[in-house]
Image (cartoon, rainbow, N blue to C red; front, side):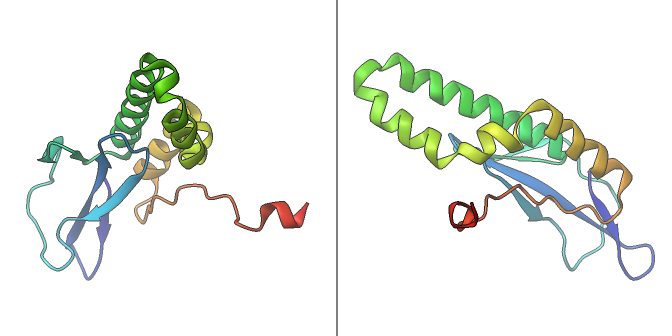
Length: 133
């Protein structure tokens, strides 16, 4: 759980949102302007299509599990699901192959626990990467 001390002993907490069939983990500030006395914890359901986590590692694991389940559904559809499967793999390449691998999930968890000013910054491939080669 990330807490950032600002202006004395005030603590500001963040949650991490994961949407259904999406690999992105979005940082959601909970109390940007109000201090809280109790630390929020666990998982909250926003609606049936998204979840909030107080731990970045749990959020990343859920995103990875959701993506794997969705890919399995697309594979089960056979040839009919192939175009959607290929598009999903292309759209979520960085998350599936870089951000959500176990080593990076563990790295983010450790960094969150040790750095009081932790901010989750997913890896992004530069749009002009091919031009640099």
